[in-house]
Image (cartoon, rainbow, N blue to C red; front, side):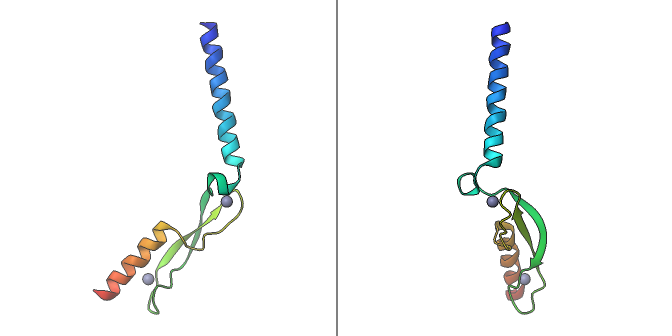
Length: 84
Ligand SMILES: [Zn+2]
Ligand SMILES: [Zn+2]
């Protein structure tokens, strides 16, 4: 039994190591770790008053300036409202 729990410990240590590596790894390899950084005006039209979420990467500090899926959806909804 001791052997099995030793192997489990080793596996857990490996998982922890990999998680740490991913967390600290370069964004271009592992992707940005986006964190909400408030919102900004969507500016989809001149009468628009939508606010889109802006994210900042917790690792490299990169900013998506509202270039994300949620923001796309908000802009699309705004256009639909204006048309309709
Ligand atoms: Zn990043
Ligand atoms: Zn809008």
